[in-house]
Length: 347
Image 1 (tube, rainbow, N blue to C red):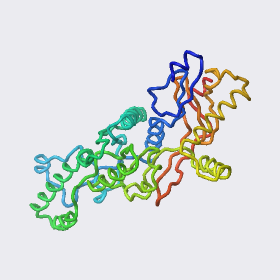
Image 2: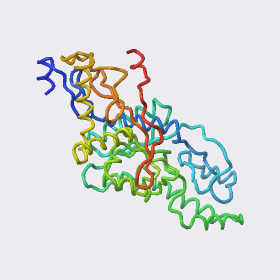
Image 3: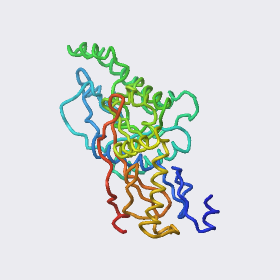
Image 4: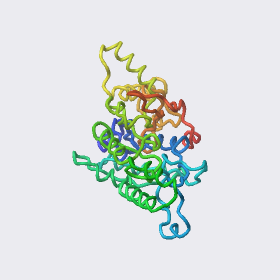
């Protein structure tokens, strides 16, 4: 409808989250995956996606000759089960990404690449798995570096078996129940999906020795669309960005009181779009809905929280960062109540 509306000098507010269809007269009110990725990754870089120091391997340390023949891997991350003396690793946090091979997945991983570099992090691998029902396990196995870590375990067992140090036997016993040594080659990983596919990928990561207790799982709003996702054991403690829960809950209560049923997922966006039109026509006295009236860098307060329309046609939303906890969520960082950035400062 965009070219037809533009020819008639009409503005369009649509509910798409595909930024590629936005124009300077067609505004998208949908929650873009890019803004969700940026919000949760920025929070992770500032509040917990931290690298750990490289520990010494279990058992006796190799002598100089063995160290020369079998130098320690510079790419194997620390093994949390064998901590060394406390120290600090000054390397930037490493964040990897997994997403379905579709336009949504492409948008999320492109946003991840940008925000990690912008935020001073280190970008890990970003891989796609099939968007259909195909098995994602080869991709998950690859990104977790499972085969390399399993080979490192066998090499360590062989080294300890040849050692005459009395502690070697104890170290060998400690490795009996292990499948790998060393953590995965990332400190956090973005899982940009939802539903059964997300649950499958998350459980595969734990199967390939990625421990969510020491590796942060990050996500998007798709995490909260299925209650089974919030109950998935592998995702407990994971972080994702979403609209302010209290604002949405209040809107849903009002809707139920009036209509006697739960609102459709798009109802809050529809309410915000209608309220914006009312504000423009009644309060701002602009019944032509000029582009300059709709674009307000300070934003509006809506049913889903703070939002604004940008000059390029997409919307910004004030998003909260939530943590999965026991089948529900808790708020780690509340949604902002006003925009504080260069765009707002220039308005």
